[in-house]
Length: 272
Image 1 (tube, rainbow, N blue to C red):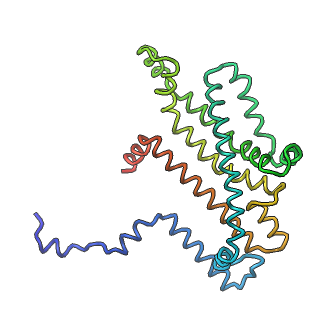
Image 2: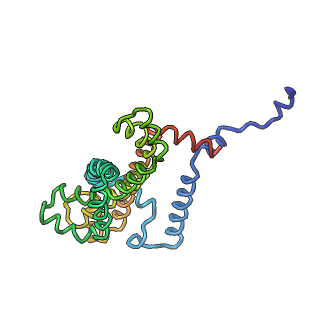
């Protein structure tokens, strides 16, 4: 039994120690990299047209936000709409492939083969067909991001064991009940894995589309800044693109925790 004196002598963590412990390790790594970057530029006297310092990029955000943010909103719209369209196409298509042998033999090989076509090569065709508006950019986002959704959804829906399906049938579950109560819950982790991969590809698709032909968006800003040798503005646009991808990924990860709470609990149990 501990005494009052022993309790008094026990060192207690101060507020700063607690705050430091709550900061994710990845953030510390990022801060160290940014600090090293800043020092390297300042000590090495590297010109801004080769590698701007993080402080210069921060000043660019402060002075140019009125152009950066509206163009970031355009890119974000393309990413979100294209991603949602890819989900609306990919998940039902995966269900049809799993439940229909004919669809699996007729469509699935074509989906796999379609990924050998470079999307950059067909982007000019889409611009010729749909013009320079939002439509071709959203189509390119869909083409880039729907593949991992389909593949992971098919793998997840097929992962239900035959014993589980036989048990569901023996209990009188209909085909729809088997899907909602057995196949889909077991497939959700795999589906979300495909969705999280698709978030990254959707951002890449939007930028590729804006590189090919656009008059707004962060990809357009990068091209204009490059033509003017404004490397600092290019870096500011690239950082905003990365932030969009990171935030999109984190939002989807939080949604996964809500939809699949048992996965988060099992991960915590394994970690503990």
